[in-house]
Image (cartoon, rainbow, N blue to C red):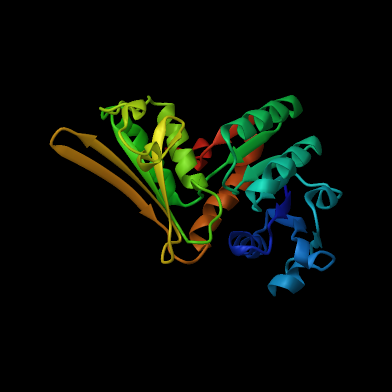
Amino acid sequence: MTIKVCLAGATGWAGSELARAMAHTDDLALVAAVARKSAGRVLGEVLGEPRLDGQVYASAIEALSQPCDVFVEYTKPDSARANILAALEHGAHVVVGTSGLSESDFAAIDAVARRQNRGVLACGNFALTVVLLQKFAESAARLIPQWEIIDYAHDNKVDAPSGTARELAFRLSQVRQPAPTVPLDKTVGPREARGASVAGTQVHSLRLPGFVIGAEVIFGMPDQRLTIRHDAGSGARPYVDGALLAVRKVATLVGVHRGLDCVLDL
């Protein structure tokens, strides 16, 4: 059976790479796309891929006039929540690649998804190395009570922390809360120097030229330290295979699920 897909952010850095990959599949059909500046054109003309014959629309609401099975959200944090909710109301399952959504956003999305009996698979990062970082970090948190996260990204990334760091902090919170030796309210000096508390974990976001996306979680015990780190290169290809898998598997879920490993046998 062919899965009909609507892709929001289809001309962006990650979305365009995913769209081109879909063009070479037999089971996925990209029936509509969202890209405001290219609205009214055929996606294949925009991306130089003749296999992509779906229309480009200015908004998710317009694109959803074309029935789809799965809506892929790859836009901006300020529009992601509305796009996801609109897709669910139209009866589509949703794959979320956009970062910057809050815990309250996910709670609201989960309520609608369950009411609609639809699945939402939210992945701060679709790369396999990130999936492994998350799993290894969860294992470490069961044994080591103290950790912090460093979140690396390019200098023009507007959301902080990144979706990768948010997802990592959330998953660690499901294992336990870290136990810092000096509680945050006992900090001497600007408390911001200790980073931001995200799901109970202190996260430090660096935004500098030379980085793409990276995440590092550091665990500490007396006289020993464990560092687990992921770094991405300059291309979007590492995220494609995971995103395709998410599109194919999201219909097996109901409600919000966090992380690609939800549909992997790990």
